[in-house]
Amino acid sequence: MNVVYLKNPLYLCVMFIKQVKKQRNPNSKIFYQYNLVQSERVDGKVKQRNILYLGSDSILKDKDKRKSVLLILKSKIFKQPLLFPDQATSEVTELAMALYQKYLLKYGEEAEGLPSTPTPEHLANYQRVDIDSIETRQVRSFGPENLCCQIMDKLEMRKIFNSLNFSTDQTSRALIAIAARAIYCSSDHLTSKLLRTNSSLNECLGYDHVITYKELYAITDHLYKFKDQIDKHLYARITDMFELEDKLVIFDLSNTYFETSKTDSKLAQYGKSKERRNDCPVVVFSGVINQDGFIRHSDIYQGNTPDCKTLEQMLNQLDKHSDPGRKKTVVMDAGIATEENLELVKTKGYDYVCVSNKRLKNYSLDNIKTTKRLTGRRKHELELSVFHPEGYSDTWMYVQSEEKRKKEESIRDKISQRFEEQLESIRNSLSKKGGTKKLEKVWERIGRAKEKYKRVSSRYNIEVTESEGNATHIHWERKSDPIKKDKDKGVYFIHIRKPSQPIEDGQQYIQGNRMQTNYSTKDKICSVPLKI
Image 1 (cartoon, rainbow, N blue to C red):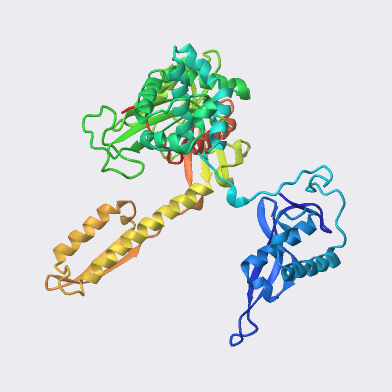
Image 2 (image 1 turned 90 degrees about the vertical axis):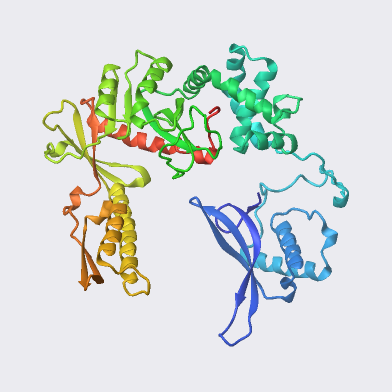
């Protein structure tokens, strides 16, 4: 990257000539002016800065000549010789030198000792190369492959595979399969093709054989047999590398769908797809994440498995993969935190922090000393207040979230808009030829719309005017919002077993929410179960 010294401090920039269309008035002729512009990064944002006005010389209208002028200007400004000085015409060179003199008048002489100054001429060895004579063969990607190989070396992947009695070929194929999934995010069939034609992964790992898609299928099945041992090794290695504290545990689930004709799969079952693909069988997968966003271990379940039925197995896995002498706090979503599961967590000896499935009505907040303001995701403010409702031995926390309030209002507004559009369609049919006009049929259509949008339909008063058994007009109006107080909007409750430091546990839940972003990347990395 070139470095420019101006009157201001040092700028790391990219220079180019910008064409600006001009017109003195709406009826006048359009003409073009040109500026020398630098693109720079200021406070994390890319901004453009006009360095020099170049005028509107006709030479600059030609793109190739404009490019030559830019190259000469940059070579003079940065004190770098032109790579091909003979290619520029005399008129282009004269214009570029005139513009450079204009640059010097504006900014003065260049500073000495530019960091971008090349090797002195008496030490440099320049050779002319005919570009047309250069040929490339077997051009392959190297950067991502090299990075993945370094990461796998840091994680000592070969060591764990050797301890599992993998052969040398199996170890190489396993490393290739893992790195290829991280780089290409594609099917095994396409991956094998990319490895043959576009990737240097085999060379990076010292594997001389062409790997087929059938070998990729076989090695991923073999890896899945040792999933628990590999998970345990990876987390132990990451903990050692980054000196992580093992205090917070976050449970979360998701699912992915399969476009397949297979009907006898034990795992792929029809369930509620989070990607709204209810026409396809799905597979549920869970992850146990630490407070720094690293996955401790994962599991795969049948697609019709309820979220609340997965906790026991995850806790059993947690016992195997963690230090039993260290107290941990489990963070759960409301879908997992049923009363039975909370009792299960207690019997296992863990503390917990979770969103309550219940919206408490009769409660009183403690004194003002127990209220604290925190910053949640997307820098939204949260207000946390501790209270102890009757009939519960644990600590509860009242949370008012600006982000949740906006989300709830946005969802309500969208559903209300769709409901009103449906009512408008029913009303319009009253005046159309062949439209539904019978009073009974009109009410049936309204009933179906209310059932479809039952989340908001109860907030509407709907009246139908009739004449001789036919509906003639439909009128509706929205009732006042049942949540009258702003303090009740965007409110939810956190249930905490450990009462000694409730505000800290509230922060842990917020941190757990942030970690869900790390876990919700299955679409980006195209993660799918290894075997269904």
